[in-house]
Image 1 (cartoon, rainbow, N blue to C red):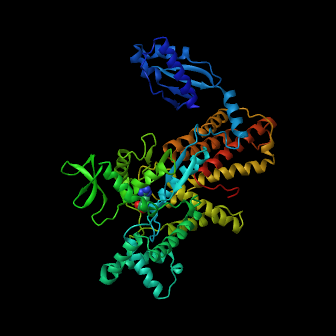
Image 2: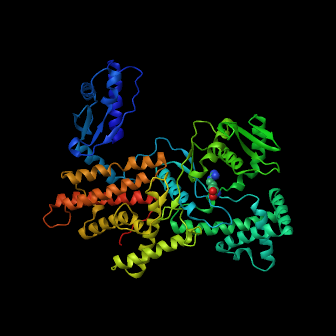
Image 3: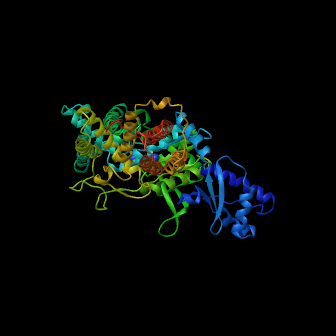
Amino acid sequence: MKELIQQLLEQTVTALKQQQVLPEGFEPRIQVDRTKDKAHGDLATNLALMAAKPAGKNPRELAQLIVDNLPASALVEKTAIAGPGFINFYLNNDWLASQVEAMASSPTANVKPADKAQTIVVDYSAPNVAKEMHVGHLRSTIIGDAVVRTLEFLGHKVVRANHIGDWGTQFGMLIANLEEVEARGTDAGDIELADLEVFYRESKARYDSDEVFAERARNYVVKLQSGDEYCNTMWRKLVDITLSHNQAVYDRLNVSLTKDDVMGESMYNPMLNDVVADLKQQGLAVEDNGATVVFLDEYKNKDGDPMGVIIQKKDGGFLYTTTDIACAKYRYQNLNADRVLYFIDSRQHQHLMQAWNIVRKAGYVPEEVPLEHHAFGMMLGKDGRPFKTRSGGTVKLVDLLEEAEQRAQTIVAEKSRDLDAEQQVVAAKAIAMGAVKYADLSKNRTTDYIFDWENMLAFNGNTAPYLQYAYTRIQSIIRRSEVDVANLQQAISLEQDAEIALAQKLIQFSDAVHNVANKGMPHMMCNYLYELAGAFMTFYEACPILKEDVAADTKSSRLRLASLTAKVLDQGLSLLGIETLERM
Ligand code: ARG
């Protein structure tokens, strides 16, 4: 809708250039905003204020010229010039109603598909092997998955890339220790991940204290890297245990990742020699004290000299950065990515910038293919400090999800007494996972956020339970109406202010989806859904549906509006990976 007005204004600017009212090279960024007060129309632009100087006219005078040259359009009922030279647009209700009709009859709520379907690689989740997934991986997983769903919904081909930490020298000690555990008679498959954490710490302790063990571990690192079969089998066991544990968390959270999406660090290992050789050959990497280093003019060290990024150590080992260079190259050259999104916490920003700087200089990924770091802040406790257990340890994801379900069960037992025990369990699960995910998704991801149980599980405010409840409530209204809403032929008519406001909110859905896809920011969808639910509540108060004195036509029209609202809430929440409930 905004876009449509923007297009009209673009045409107007072109016309005014032809008439020499505006100078030839003038390319304004046309801004169209929703008005705060509906008395001033639905949308407004400050174009005349921005263009007044280049045009050499006073803003109101220019505003009039813009209005006079605006192409005729069915969506604009009338325009008005306001204040110092704002132009207000009043939208046409018939047009609005036709848009709402189109949404109601479209299986995808009339969301405009992407102009061009792209191949988009999304790097997210990325936990580490032999380590428990912790809350730090939660944000990447949840935000990344919402964006993935949104991109696919718009018709893009998405490659989910779970860049797990499955390679490195730590595997030497892990293999050496696994060998001892197996010698004692425990099968690798019996080691649970909770034990694997303990196992990791035990391996480290053995490595630090026992020279014979450490020697064996170092030997295994070399063997593993040269493709030794025994070491490879042992490594595979450790990876598999971790993956099955992670998969259980993904499934529980309704995250769309599967084992097939794993593209861990180890996958790039065979490519690293060639990458280093090529960077040397291109003159980008040089030998420096036995290591191979790329010096970047864009980054200065503390002496003001170009910063050196090591890509191969003296002992031949590669680094996290080397892997990310090879990885970006692979995503473009082998996966044919048109765009690559990385959901990684903001502390890794410099790392990515350096890796990509090298990638661009080496010509591995052309400038037209964006490499985007969608950074996010930390999850903090209520005290504003990094989220920790009471004893100060990192909170395990499984424990967190367990607690969420328990809390939700208490709430459901209290609020949803008409549900039988089984329904209560289903509702509690959906509410718990929805609450945890939504609490994260609804905040602008670039900032840290405070994890607060009471807030996220509240039934009012911008929370998952509030939106889930709004959906359930509409379903209940429809059930009580005893009307087959899907087959209603009655046209939607928009008369009351609250009906118009709801319709205007409904048709913004497509913009909300596109915003999330373009910016990688799911909180834009959350805000939209929250406003939609609010518009529905206002509508439902002002425009009764089930009362006896409501005329049949009006009732049908309102039922269709309600049903469309439910459809959009359901679709929007499902793009966020959050389930709705028919009853709660
Ligand atoms: N495994 C890493 C960590 O836990 C995150 C990997 C992110 N992806 C990447 N391409 N570097 O910090």
